[in-house]
Length: 112
Image 1 (cartoon, rainbow, N blue to C red):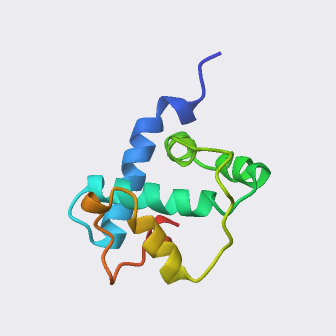
Image 2: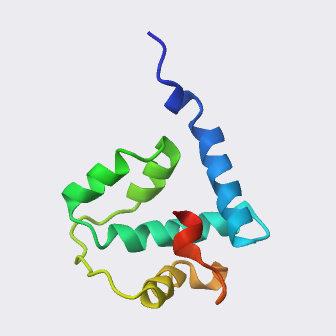
């Protein structure tokens, strides 16, 4: 039996996703979109129980799933959902010197 297409095409699917995020956010590169996506996924992950995070990860394509769980400290204190501006500010703390989420961006929507 061949291995699943999801894994065969994981890189292409992930690249396509980042291009969509880049274009939606009107960013100059997929590298910028990567950092924004990673920051948003981490903000979301911090607010989920382990069980809910696993359920969520299981519906993501392989590349995005890998990014969602990468460098995860499952013992990190769980945060509460709060207003979107506070969550965007939290996302901006990831690699803050190289994070290009702008004040006018809609990163939650762009990544979703």
